[in-house]
Image 1 (tube, rainbow, N blue to C red):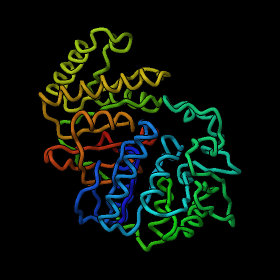
Image 2: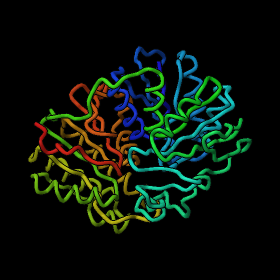
Image 3: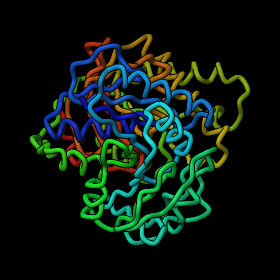
Image 4: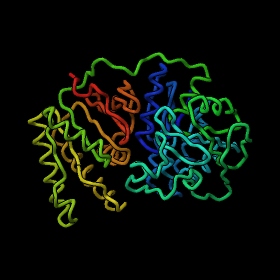
Amino acid sequence: MIAIIADDFTGAAELSGLGLRYGLKVEIDTIVPKTSDVDLLVISTDTRLVTSEEAFKRVHKAVESLNDLGVKWFFKKIDSLMRGQISNEISALLSASGKNKVLCIPANPTLGRTIKDGTYFVKGKELLQTNLSKIPGFDYSTSNVMDFLMPSVGLGKCYIKKGDEIIPDSICVGEVSSFDDVLYWAAKVNDSLIPVGAADFFTALLNLNGYKIKNSVEQPKLELGEKILFVFGSAYIKSRNFIAEAREHGCCISEIPAELFDTNEDSEKYIKQWADDIIDSIKTYSRVIVAINRPYVRLDSFSHQLRNYQATAVQKALQVVSINELIIEGGATVSSVLNKVGIKEMIPLQELSHGVVRMKVKDKPDLHLTIKPGSYKWPDNIWDSK
């Protein structure tokens, strides 16, 4: 069995989709099960937005439990833009696994995300010159990858190029300009080393371990259920454009009440008002989008509050009406909604496009869940589903 520890649900879903592409039997859980018969077990620790201490605790516990399962090898999935509690999670990995080397390859060259001379580039532009540097809650002040790593007691950090040594007790970030570079670093992985990185690094490891692609990402037609609820929390402009396009395809849009965005007074009243609007919309329309659909929110605490309002409204609505498909965009939004609704175990079924995965919810047989990272593309045929 291969195991992945991901710091958020969208990352877990993305790599589960890769597993499907390579013909593996996959499961996503929020805690490590006592037994499992899958080929690829993906654990979402949901640690990207928690404290460093809580991140260490969750990852350490997950690794200990995976050791008891007899995992063949495991991979630590991190955000390709290196958001989150990476240093403390890696400290937990080293502590629980007994290993002393870490190779970190966050670059995703297949998506135009590369690292050259320590500088992070997105499609040829330094990160700071792109909209990705302005993600709410993760503002960047530099494009230097080593500055993305917070200090961690007893753990150093280093930037390495081809031919450089992987130093023990350090987070060694490798230079990557192409997928061939990712393959080079994947060939350096051995039993004394923990591989940490993004989707391209995991893909390279699958290739080098003899796995072959068995399923195409290209899907001629999506077979979705009758009642579909989209939940959008992402502030990306592409998401707001998608909402505008959705209106043209007959989707009903249930937006956050202005009172919740402008003030927190009487929040319960306006959350109920929002939930009632969602309920009425689902009863009337086959496709409903629940969206904040506002410009960037710069204050982290307010972003969290808005996500909680949205997740609570969705929870209240789903206690009254049933849906067949729950489709969520944005990692933090996914976490908020799944925690509120109580979804903990998922069986990935279909990779709709890169990073967009449709799953069966284990304890809700009539419900399917699809997760999409905020910055990734929707499948071109999303409106062709039947």
